[in-house]
Image (cartoon, rainbow, N blue to C red):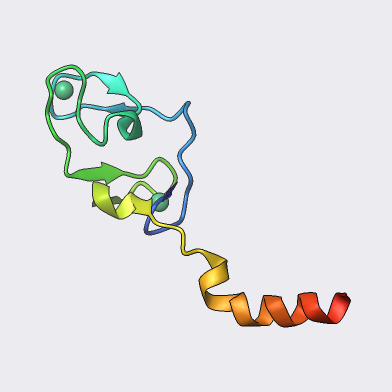
Length: 84
Ligand SMILES: [Zn+2]
Ligand SMILES: [Zn+2]
């Protein structure tokens, strides 16, 4: 699982903080809580990017990695055979 902005591919660091605004004003790292404000429990459906300042659905920030071996297994086996 990788977390990055779906628009600019910015990878959030632990030092990034989001403000619950409009809301209770709490500052927190939104990916620690899957977008839920720890101050007032508001569930934020969209997340603002610290890098490009645009809004995207929170779920779109989570990206599953596709295992390389599924695509390139045949090629890898051929290369290994050639070396040995
Ligand atoms: Zn809040
Ligand atoms: Zn961005």
